[in-house]
Image 1 (cartoon, rainbow, N blue to C red):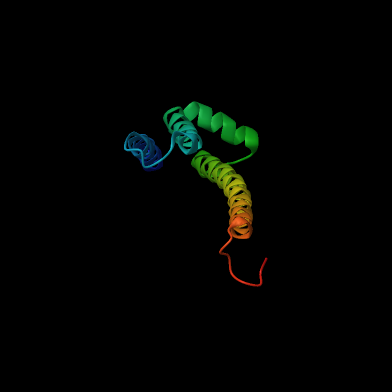
Image 2: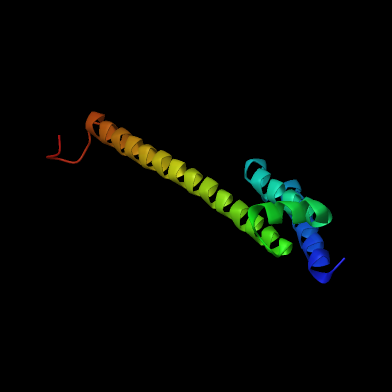
Length: 121
C-alpha cells in the first residue's frame, strides 16, 4: 500500500466518523448528512478496493487512479452545493411569502382597530 492510498483511507474514514459524530450531536441534520455520508463511504470503498479503483479509473480514461478519487470527491461536493442551493431557494421563497403574509396581517389589524393613526383609513 502506498502513501496516497493510506492517506485517502485515513482521510475518508476520519471524515465519515466526523459526519456521524456531527449527526449524533445534532449539529448536522440527517437530511443534509446523507450526501456527505454517501460520498465519504464511496471514497473509502474505492480507497480500500484498489482493483475497483483501477478498473473504473481506466474505464473513464484517467491514467493515475488516485486522481479519480479527487474527481469523485469534487462531484459529490457539487451535488451537495446543488442540494444546498435548492434548499436556500426554497427557504428564500418561504421567507418572502411569510413576510408578505405578516405585512398583510398587520395592515388588516391596523385597518380594523378604531384607534389607528389619523388620516390613513
